[in-house]
Each structure stands twice: as structure tokens, then as C-alpha cells.
Length: 250
Image (cartoon, rainbow, N blue to C red; front, side, top):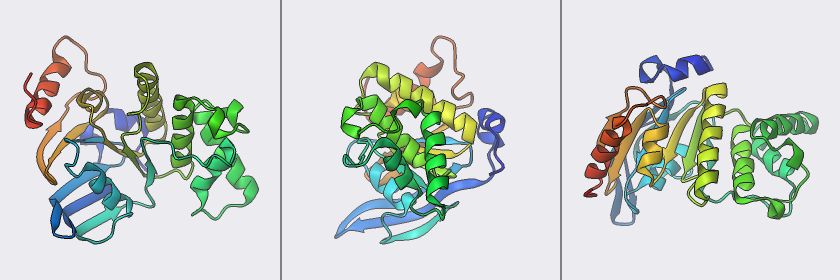
């Protein structure tokens, strides 16, 4: 990967190589047209947030980009194998934390020792080295989500797909996880597609926010100074614009 963490912080203009892209994708469930000519591009080192009301097709876009849904028309291009993390950590309760993270390496041709070493580095990245031998049921919600993130990142993906990853967490833990995500993103330079219902979260994290309605992209907002926005009213105008596109009156 050629994108550096420094380049990632310079914003969208620094991004050239696509980590993942959909072009004019259409998808049906039976007679229901759930995606209509959807085009979304995530560059290496870029964070793109996808927002929309429930049922707008956000998770379907993510599944198509992840390669979990193949019965669609249009083009899909992904650099390598994308990693995926959900709102629920989906850890195997009968496996300890380290073994759960090693599971993220099932596609990699590594020895057991190499896989364990890679898993331990991923756990160190998310601050859970001391919980490697713990069972999932002994973890807090935030710790379980950190393990899920480590499992997604252990294979060193170019594209990270996040489906409401912090939605089930309390407010303080959610803020902590946002900070962790940004720290890991700056360190590794992967592209991120973040599906979220939270407009404030989208504005706080993303280079670009894409609004989906009834399975179609209806608005795209580029944030010129992402993640470094300061000053009263700076984020408020973006929030107001996105809420308006979502049909929310404030």
C-alpha cells in the first residue's frame, strides 16, 4: 500500500488509488428493486460515510462491496480482500480472544506461529494484549468491539467495511472507539466505508458523506477539512445539510 498516514490526513485530494468501488450497481430482491444505479468509491486512506434511513439500502451496498452478495448488475472493484465488522461483534464464545482474532486470517497462508504473532500485534493495536486468553463472555461491550476490530484488521486489508460498528455502545465508549478507529486508520492507511445512522458521527469521521434514499444515491457531501474541523458552526452547517437531505426538519 502506497498511501501513508500523513497523506491520509491531507484529505481527499491526496487519494488516487481506489480501495473499493461500485459503479452503476443495481440489485433486486425478487421484484423489489433495492439498489438503483449506485456508484460509491472509497480511495486508499479515505473514510467515506454512508447514511440513510432504515431500509434505504445501506447494508446492501456494504454487502455487495464486501462480496457477500453477488447477484447484482454493474461493476464492483476491490483491492484485495475487504475486512468487515458489524454492530454486533459476532465473536465465537467457545474460542478465546486470540483465537477469535486468528480467525480473521483464514484466507492467509501462514503457519500457526505466524498467525498467532499477527493476532497478538492486532490485539496490541486495539489495547487488548492483556485479554488475549480471555473468553468473549467476560468482555465488556467496548472490549468485544475492539476484538471484532482486531479480527477485521489482522489480515491487513486495504478496505475496511463497518456496518454500524459503534451503534450498540454507550456514548462514552462510542467516542473512545471513534478515536481508536482514527488512530488505526492513521497508522495503517486503509480505506473505510462506514455505514451509520448517526449524522454527527459521519461528519466527525468522514472525508465524504454519501446519502442513500430508497436504494439510490441522492446526495454527496465533501468535507474540505475532515477530522480537524474547529470553530463554532463549522460542523453545524454540514449536519444541517445532511439532515435536510434525509428529510429531517430542525
